[in-house]
Image (tube, rainbow, N blue to C red; front, side, top):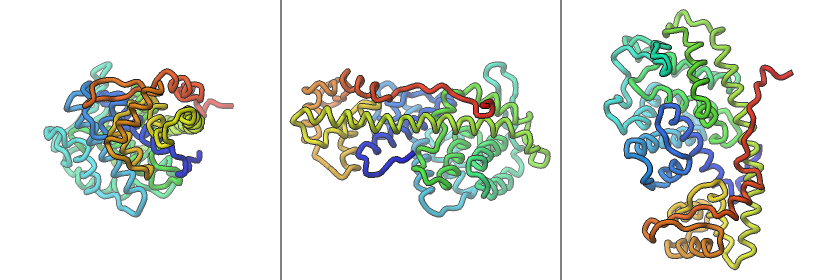
Length: 354
């Protein structure tokens, strides 16, 4: 997969991919929002359809993930202080979750379907030492996919915090993946895949957890179903991302062709790059996309551009002037669909392939 920085549409693809990962990871914990709502929150907007606690939880998670992606670009050390800081970012919207603090009582992972205890975390006494050991060994020097998967699993087995352990495990896995990859880190995540397969994710965790955490007795052979699940996730997510990149390139060309048939300036394609993924376009988001592309414009110019796109039938305006937003028109939806965006892959199991 090659996403060249020279492609003007890659910013929209990157934002959409990160939003899908944020949405997928949080949906596992019952923190529900659409991808478009996650994009809006990342842009500093407050969707009327999302309650305040959900919004704050998504803001915190996205902050932690953005920090992780920045860390991966340079040298860093994973230690217990960094882990607690990431937890604080993720859960500080609710102080009852003890953001940044290890728990002081036992914790149990309960199977929602049965109410049975699926796993008991490490005992609270000595958690600080356990987490120092975890941090020292989490980012191994073997295969990056295996190392990242085991960091995720070991964190969940320890379950060091009162709440937010699942989200933290996936953040640390993303950090482990990003530090070893030549691919843009945001495209390495598998949170989107896991979010669509929550039940299977919990089932394999319960299977390999063996009831309770024991640093001394845990047999690495027990992790085989987990490794298989994670490698399958990576394969299928990579296939989907690859197809999305190829389709996005074709869709972007279609958006550019639509603009060429108008008298509009070339910069307005930035609005259509976002719309082709099905995302809502607002003046603030359009201006941010242009700023990132090195083509900043004033609020007045941005409003005029979006209004002109609506008059051309390429966007559909909703709301009054203060809260106006734009949805992709049927023309844009059709062009995106014909380019392959939105195509649903059928999962394959590489361990059953002949």
